[in-house]
Amino acid sequence: MDVFYVLSAAAAGAGLIVLAVALLRTAGTAKGLGRAAAAMRVDVESRTGMLRARAAAVGVAVRDLRIRRVRNGSASVPEPVRSALNE
Image (cartoon, rainbow, N blue to C red; front, side, top):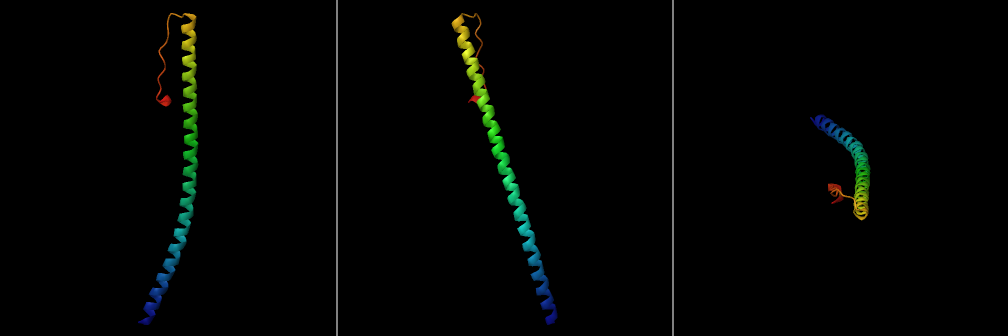
């Protein structure tokens, strides 16, 4: 009967070792995925900021164009362009 206890303890110990190795590998993979997600987040934020800057530049250009047209006495003055990116 004591042999069964020893075999059970050995199987449990081997299972714990396999479980520990699997958890360590999974943790490494999760860390890599976290780094990739952070890099993508930074890239998307950078691109979004660039789009906002471009939209603001277009808004400034349109405003300058309207001012020039008003100064030159143009008959039609276009309405300002509204964009959610500028707000």
